[in-house]
Length: 130
Image 1: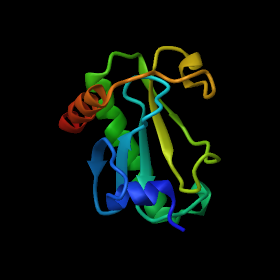
Image 2: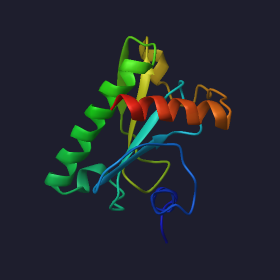
Image 3: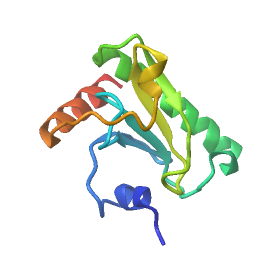
């Protein structure tokens, strides 16, 4: 059965896309830790990030870097934090989160509530900055 992320990639489930190439897809987390929280995923459905073949793994990390640089241009923050947890969805993914302190990367602290309009605007701003 396809993961929710595979359904997002295929368009079965809508997303606020930030970036896409032949191997990766990036979109806003709809339950963000902070405004602009972005998920970067390989299009190939692989559960565990360290099972990803080296060439795809390298591409995924370079893609995350490209997106983080774009995020930093449009989101007010000190840095863009990166985290890989991998327990909540069986499809490898990187979390990119605008941060001003280490506490901003704390999962389970609650989420920022944003409207679909706000999410669309943020996604457009990040996409334009990449």
